[in-house]
Length: 492
Ligand code: NAD
Image 1 (cartoon, rainbow, N blue to C red):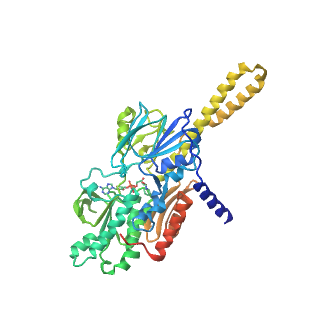
Image 2: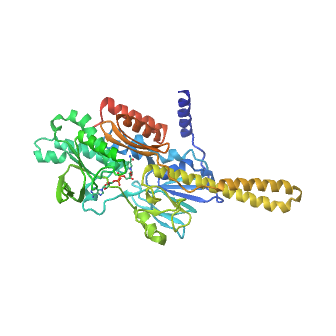
Image 3: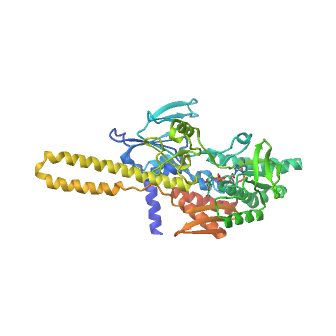
């Protein structure tokens, strides 16, 4: 306990007492980092920033703990509890570290500049500028895939950013309050209270589970007259949900959803969305295709990732990227193929792994180690050059200088040996509603699959330990307790 309190105290002290900011050092390289997500923040956390002039650029001035984002859509967790300001993260870093709130629009790999724009509301106009780099890390993530399906962008909510979760929270209550309004037709009540989720990946499944909890635990008690009309439908094109989980957990999730009365429609591919209905093509058990329509009040679209325009633009400038479809192809050191001094991490990079927070985090850690090593290597090589130069100037000290050269060379050999990036999969976790979770965990070279209430406790403790800061952890615990004791806040 004393250790824990001392640690919390130390973290708070560090947070409240920033390092003095220093001017850029012209003898150091400028390292530009794009993005403040899992990849970039993991890199910044471990990077020895004294070795570089560091510039961080992102339109989002905070890190978002995305695994708990579905819980923000229903108010189980308040959104600020899973946000950590980038300024707080950077203030304990030594050396020259700058942050600009701006979005990168293009990268010129020949001139080594990033074009950025800032459309600040207070200024009322967009400002564009260029930021030069010696080394560039692209960690801008991905955008929502819509596959060009008509009506999706105009009518759906996504679930990627904090604003998306806030919008969903408002819309759920809008649907509920409108349905509860005087003299609504039964068809309209049914439509408004039909919540449709498209995409049976972890995002869609977790959101559907949270939504059903919200209804069962809170809405139903507060507005009993609509309680038998609320429905959640999860639509998935493949034959089952959670395709990346083991068969046993897929079956467990599907049977739990059945108990929770969440309707799963697999083998159903959405083709078109209007402002009031989702049009899909379903494959029936006898293999026939039939058209189905789902009138909805709220539609959440969670069908995975697509490449961001800034990344697509860069891919178009590099011939070696012409066959890559899902993002920037990188080599085993995460260097963008066909480019010099550019690395890519996280969901915008194609390194042969799934686009998850876990992969992005490990890639960021790897790059931090690589860059720390590169700086050390350069410093040692310079030391060897200086020592070799002084051999002729100080003939009396030849033996001593030679010994020092040998020792420096030994150090250099040791640190130069950095192995390529290797992803170590710790497992996958997903919340499935009614205080149950599923976990596919890899431990001691074995795989363990579990689902249920104990797994839910494991899910909570694992996510709690992964939260960015002690402040986040305390806020999340507080939110969990608050929603358990007093119910979720249903105000819009
Ligand atoms: P996903 O890519 O995992 O799943 C999207 C699903 O949408 C697919 O199963 C696909 O078949 C379906 N789909 C696509 N188009 C469709 C259509 N027109 N009609 C019906 N269904 C359609 O997407 P995600 O859940 O957003 O996850 C993105 C990535 O992030 C994945 O790699 C995932 O593993 C990871 N992630 C992991 C967790 C976790 O482990 N808890 C949570 C969130 C995200």
